[in-house]
Length: 247
Image (cartoon, rainbow, N blue to C red):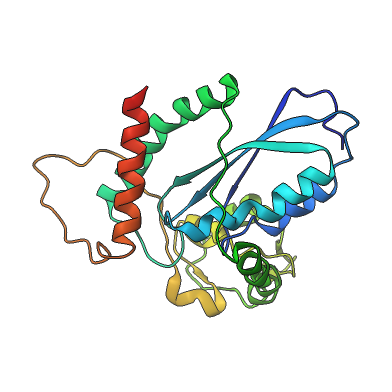
């Protein structure tokens, strides 16, 4: 595939272990080198706005540069977890509301030609390289997924798997291959919570977020994860608000 002739190209992904997912990197490796430079931007989502997330595009940007595709802008958006733990409804709404307001501002930067790159981090490339062990680990862990009797055979997991790693045999048995990204899409979206994701079962999150604004008269639920990366979230929302209001 060639991106020759495009004025601007965007690459988006959810951050996996502070890296781009394996299938995203494979796609970029399949691209042909452009004769003339092509400008590009990167947008990514993560459950926490920590500095380590800044290194997630290093490998991707390096691969793109070899193909004469030059990244001028890079953006990270915080969205609720589908693994590790479930964010509160109030936090999920705040994340979504912030993203909706930030994206038009960031698009304006891209179209205006205002570059924005993630800050470099000491030993960032080393950490990113080391954590790409998840790409190998995902293929191994994914083979151990199990499906409980609660399964209603809606096949939603098969249809939504980004690597087509889930197969169903003629006898109706599930078969998991060696291309799992541990994106948790199958686990998160299962309507009957029938998945047991192997070693990650303790981090399982199931069921879609509503993203609806919390009702004023609704009783406030205690957020048991409120202290998790509290400073990082505070900084992210404050910086986002300043950027939105500046426009």
